[in-house]
Image 1: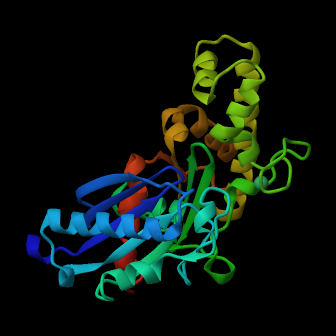
Image 2 (image 1 turned 45 degrees about the vertical axis):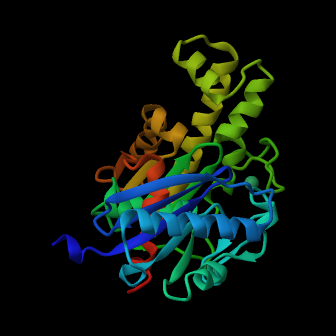
Image 3 (image 1 turned 135 degrees about the horizontal axis):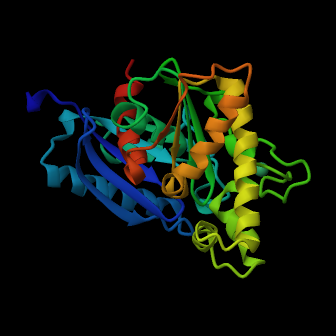
Length: 310
Ligand SMILES: [Zn+2]
């Protein structure tokens, strides 16, 4: 039985580290490792480091090239998944406008197909195949961490926009006079409810980071922490209202470091919105916590070769 399992390599490129794993198509992660992203160094160096690590991993698990369905890469966006290019000057400045698919494909002698996906979409694929999104056809996943990521699955397929682009759910407006966002506008969801935005707001109140703000809020200290968390939850409620009416998903998955740790607070915003939304079915929409943790992206990326196959 084991011999029939399909095999692939998943790569999850974040702003600071890259996770690389050997995965079988039942979601089983055989071997995984991490290398620093080093996004300030030349792209060629990154290609060599990623390819060397993949090669080492293949040898460690004892796979032969002809057995491998492909290499799937999830990368912090924007990316163009169809062309295989990274268009992210924000967190991967030296790699901007670089094609990642072709050089890795060439490096493995054109014997292993290579695919690229936005990392938030890869994370939803991971949850859909092996985590809490399993069994649903229409899913919205939001990840709350340093930034806010989002992905939507429609009838079992990742929703794509123009040129295969990934919609930016972190930049929907939630406060008209809100703080400035790095995208150039003000009052974006991400400019208020992301870990980075909370930290910026908290530093004015003498908190080191979002973790300290949540800690103080949980201890009912009131003051600055209460103000920042209430503003965050209000932003999430406003966004929840938009997401519910736009997508009517069967389930909403909340993930990311902050999202999972404070799932109780975040889920409440969605549950309240569902209760109050007269145009939305009041029962049946499931609000669930992501199950795969930081492995969702790498496992989801590994599913790309099988996903794009049909
Ligand atoms: Zn924005």
